[in-house]
Image (tube, rainbow, N blue to C red):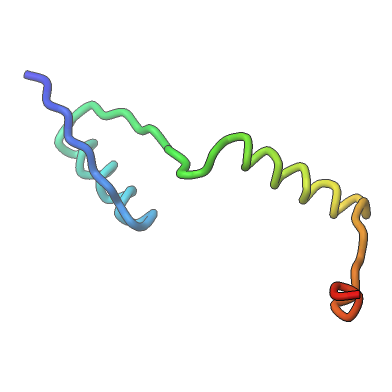
Length: 67
């Protein structure tokens, strides 16, 4: 008998507890980590962080925003 049960743990501790419980009961399981963010958006943010860490950015003073 194969039944799919989808759990929505809110913390890493809950994930660990579900893993331990399944292992203790000898229940095979698969994990699939999902992101709620668009992969293109994530790539763009990572590129921006890399550029910033390399000093490739422009600094704008707040006072200059409305000039």
